[in-house]
Amino acid sequence: MKSLDTMDVLPREKESTMSANLAAMHRETCGRLGSRAALRFKRDGLYHDVSWSEYRRQADRAAAGLIGLGVQLGDRVAILAENRYEWLIADHAMLSAGAVTVPLHAPLSPQQVEYQVGHSDARGIIVGNQAQADKVAAVLKSLPRLEFVISFDPIKPVGSLKTLTWEGVKHRGALRGEAGAREVAQREAQLTPQSLATIIYTSGTTGNPKGVMLSHGNLLSNSEATMYISDMESSDTLLSWLPYSHIYARTCDHYVTTITGMTVALAESIDTLIVNLLETNPAWMTAVPRFYEKVWMSVEHYPASKRKSELRKIFGSRLKQLSSGGAPLPKHVCQGFRDSGMPLLEGYGLTESSPVISFNTAEHCRVGSVGRAIPGVEVRIAADGEILTRGPHVMQGYWKNPAATAETIKDGWLYTGDVGHLDAEGYLTITDRKKDLIITSGGKNIAPSEIERLLVSDVYIDQAVVYGDGRSYISALIVPNFENLSAKAKELGVDLESDGRFIRNAAICDFYEKRIADVMQSVSQPERVKRFLILASPFKFEADELTATLKVRRRYVVKNYEKELAALYEGVTAATE
Image (tube, rainbow, N blue to C red; front, side, top):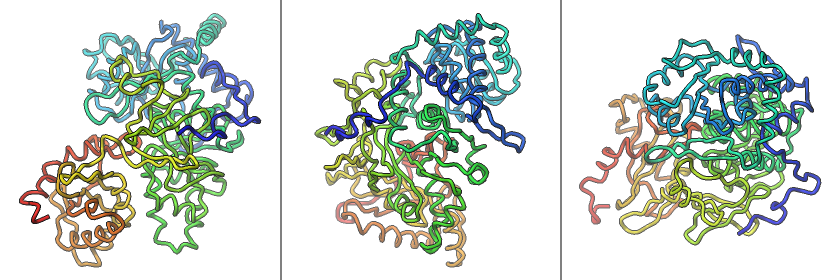
């Protein structure tokens, strides 16, 4: 099914004015808004603003500095740093120099950095600090094509690499004067919508990650279409905290706000997010379901009449919209926010689609769905239930991997790997990842994410992963809501001692058995969780159990606990199920 006619093209009063490339888009906004605040960041306890004019001036100087270092059109330059305002300026500088940005997730190990920098053939890398520089130094012998490293903070020299500071690169660019400015303008003039802008490595479920190639046109079209379905205004502020190395924040927090001219306030970290919300009082925020789940758990115990005021204390008085993406949003969380007067809207996309495919809007929202296709995007469902999409948002392919590209893009349609359905009004609902579907030994097809959503709807369950492919019944790994469980343990007169990995107290297990049985009443017998393990700690990024946007990587979780999960089926026969 194609997206609705009203969503196939931009509204008449919002006809496309898409720039030729991302650099031109940024330059136009900076010239138009001048002294107004583009970026807001906190350092040494105080907030500082960077104007649009200064934003462009710094990007131009850095672009000229990069060209002076020998960066050519199409060269890859990696960036390995936590979120900071310099990250955003560096991205625009690389784009203006005609380079291809290769963003790396800040928590990557040295071995992961080695693969992504090496596979992308990056000529240089920008790092945030000494800790990130040390990762590069540890694998430098395996990166013969790497020529230079630039650091936002002071660092020690990295082996034989030309080592420069960020300020030094900008200073080099400034010294090049008019000649440098002309070279930057010449580079930008050569960029077209088809020019490669970035290579983003997916987290992957098995093997090495694939490098997704996104063009200037991919990112511009997706940013513009996302802007058109919102009521963003240039006077608004967006609080940004998701990693810019991920496509979700890259497009929605970085490029969409540049098109609209909004102020981007950078959160200090995920740990200070609530404080930063109070300090910046934003109109917009993008986040992932994990964040909204935790917030909902903190207010769910209040009477319904009080939840709105409690949520407003967290999000501030100017909030217009909260956006959720990157993973499925539990329906009860979305409905709870909306019932409390908080405009929480869910969308859907993936790195290969720049990323937004569909989104709920303030005017057209259906809780439980991921909305309707955004302007210019087509969506249809294949015979086996897989979601396909076509449009200007679809990636150019996987870097140096034509076989994987051919498997994923067929006749212009991107095969998402997700399973779902469209209703008569064009609302898309995701049921699961195609590769994650569980087929029991009895031949029953089960969507694990649906069962997991039911489990985490219980106030004593924080995270869940179900298991049972080829097995006679479904089991699960349960991460408790430790705050609620601690209170219950006191009430039961038991402790929460564990063996390091699991909580095995009989009273606690009995308590969870009853609660799980209750939430399983809404599904058929084959879909119900029969046995489970209670984990002593949450899933961890460091154990490959979470993506950069805190989405659970089911296959890695199962791999880490497969021995214990398999033990749940020992001695089980058809007669004893």
